[in-house]
Length: 259
Image (cartoon, rainbow, N blue to C red; front, side, top):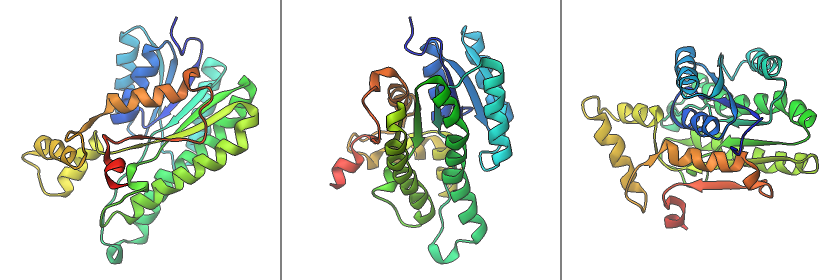
C-alpha cells in the first residue's frame, strides 16, 4: 500500500523540473496527480509518462497568475476525482537585474507568479481540504529567501514572502488539521538553472555551467530535482503529520555554511 493511496494532489509547475519530479514521487506512492502548468505540452507529456507507468493523472494547462484559470483547474480536479487532499505549489520564475534597471513589468511578473499564484491556489484549495477533513500544502521557497545574490532583489523578496505566508497559513489552519510547509532549495538541476546559465552567456556549454553552480554548495555539487521532490513528498505525506509552519532546507549545506 502506497503512502498516497486514495488521495488526490494538485501540483503547479508540474510539467517540468521540481514539479515534475514531485508528480512522479506522488504517483509512485499511489496518489492521483493533477499536473498544472503554463506549458500545456509539458503537462500533457508528464501525465502521459505517469499513465504509462500505471498511475492516475490529469493534465491542466493554465497560468497561476490568472485566478479564473486557478479556480477552473481546482474545479476540474474536484469534478473528476471528487476531492483534493494536498497542494504542492511549485510554479515560479527567476528574473535577475540591477535594481535601478528593473522595470515595473518584471516586478509584476515575479511577484504575481511566485507569490500571487501560490496564494490563489491555496485560497481555492483550502475549502476542499476542509471538506476532506485534513490536508497538506507545500509551497516553494528558496535558500535565496535567507541569503541572496546581487541583482536578485525581486526573486529573493518573492521567496521571502512565501516563507512568511507559510508561517501565517500554518497557524491559521492548524486547528483544522491542514498543514502548511515550504521548502528552500539551493541550486537545482532544472530548466530554471539552464535559463540562468543562458543569462550568463553560456549557450554552448550550458550543462557544464549548470554543474558549476553546485560548487557554491558545501557538498560541491548540483542538487537533483528528485532529491527535492522526496522532501516535498515527505511534507505532503502523513509521515510529516506533526510538521507545520516549517521551511525545509534542501540546499546541500548552503545556508549552514553562511551561518
